[in-house]
Amino acid sequence: MSEMGSVKSIPSPAISADERSHEVDHPSSLVAHFGAEQPLRLDCGVDLTPFQIAYQTYGELNADRSNAVLICHALTGDQHVANVHPVTGKPGWWETLVGPGRPIDPKHYFIICSNVIGGCMGSTGPASINPATGKVWGLDFPVITIPDMVRAQAMLIDRLGIDTLFAVVGGSMGGMQVLQWTAAYPERVYSALAIACATRHSAQNIAFHELGRQAVMADPDWHGGGYADRGIHPHRGLAVARMAAHITYLSDAALHRKFGRRMQDRELPTFSFDADFQVESYLRYQGSSFVERFDANSYLYLTRAMDYFDIAADHGGVLAKAFADIKTRFCVVSFTSDWLFPTSESRALVHALNASSARVSFAEIETDRGHDAFLLDVPEFFDISRAFLQSAGKARGLSLEDR
Image (cartoon, rainbow, N blue to C red; front, side, top):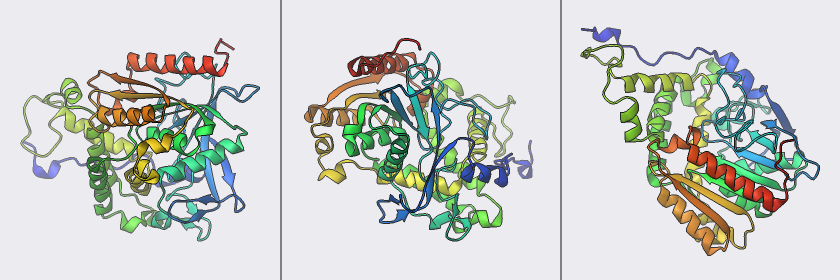
């Protein structure tokens, strides 16, 4: 029997704080800088200046600048949607959907993906250096919202000289950004692919986020958000937050199919609190690998931004008013086993779009893979995405023949 003192906790990250901080202010990607003459007006009433946006592009912009596709990343994503990640060395986070031969192919589209404001992979956020103090922002960074993220993206799109985006695409928090784009800049979005998302965050989702934030803040290494000044990182608290969140991305059926009650490298229980079960080991791995690439304060800020999101609240509580007279073509996709953003949320969005006489198609895809299905190999999702974009491209007059 294992001694209780031999229990293995979540290991420290393999990457150093210095390595992580390099990507925060000097990312391995393109960077757009905005000076004092171009402040970002935040919903909290603060003008953020100066600031920067880190982004990646794939493919070429056509002559009439009509083939630009903006990819919006989810909570723990970044700009490295279809290239090797500079920190983890892993493939791009959405290479199932974006890339050669995929529904969003750089042969046909000019693809843009930026790290959101508040992130930690090159766009200005709480892990960045505050130019006024020369120190890391930490909790002095102003609270940001999904509309703030989209306003920053719009400034980037302006910088790139693009008036209208052919498509804005995203899932989960990325889907929230898609919907905000269509509500705030309807004339600038020709088509929108909103996946596994909602027009507002539910009470249950806010509760899960609060659980994660409390895990981070309870870590003794958090130091009220000032851990960077001490050269440390609250990796245990952030790992627990990631573990809790990851459970919500899956389904009971998926967990049972993948792990069941199988033991990890043993036949009998150790009668300790070590990771006896495969599912325990899997969650610990998810937690420890996450902290290698993500900043704890950024996690607090981005989860809070999702919590505040509520499109209807900005339109007198009537969701349809947010999309009044909109000309954007919509495709809304949900998954049957997604209990984080259930199909009922997507149906409410579709009903509001129908009430606004918007052009909208809707698909509920049957799968047991849970919320994460939009990131996985789900052929029906790829077929629907490809067909929607091809149809919109034909209506837009895009040439989608191989170039």
